[in-house]
Amino acid sequence: MLKRFAALAAALPLLAFASDPLPPAIQQIEKQGVKIVKEIPAEGGLRGWLGQYQDMGVTVWLTPDGKHAVSGYLYDEKGNNLSEAVFTQELYIPQGRQLWEKLSAAKSIKEGNPAAKRKIVVFADPFCPYCKQFWAAAQPWVESGKVEINTLLVAVLNPQSGPNAAAILNAADPAKAWRDYELSNGKTLPASPKGTSKETFSLLQYNQKLMDEMGAAATPAIYYMNEKQELQQVVGMPDAQQLKAMMGPQ
Image 1: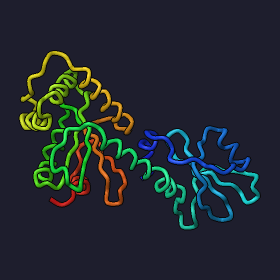
Image 2: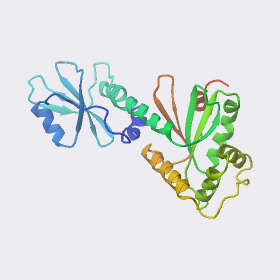
Image 3: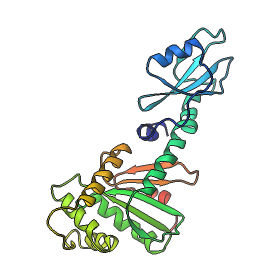
Image 4: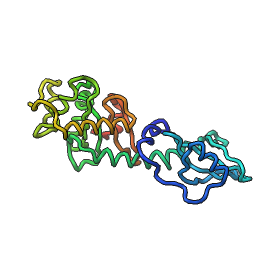
């Protein structure tokens, strides 16, 4: 869980900041570049704070004398990492939900039932073979109305990725154009005027920026919310178990 959300956490500002004056020892930790988010429950007579350094969560502990601070993981007698649980619940999951709202608001190619309970956002390149595999694998769920797929086209794999993506996005029906393109193995492309419109170019740029913010370096980069409303990421072609987790039963 920690590794999954570490890259995502960097994409959004912190959700909350401490309002009460910090003890001097905690202020010294803050001067080292750790952003203090909030005070958290602590064990063993300690006081604790959740912080963030670059794209990682940090827990900071104040000793009972109030004069010394330690940053690092806190474990209990059973070996449970109490700090990681704090990162997940207080930082990564809430920020993941904000990221999902940002993904959902992006202008995408929509396929499937708009009222479907399961919605998936995928970054795809027109020349990505694994994107094509994922598109084909998702069709039974899409056609049954159980899943809506929201595709954000990017141009990262081929010099022709941009022109092909632009042609699809400029089509009268981008969803049909994308479907025809995938079904034809990239051979059916709608006619497109020479050059890419400023609007379409800006959309492709935004999709690329958003993909970078999500910490994905390859396509398909797939995002969905699980039953606990936690943002999930799968990069590359999902296996059968991952497909079932994101799409549910057929």
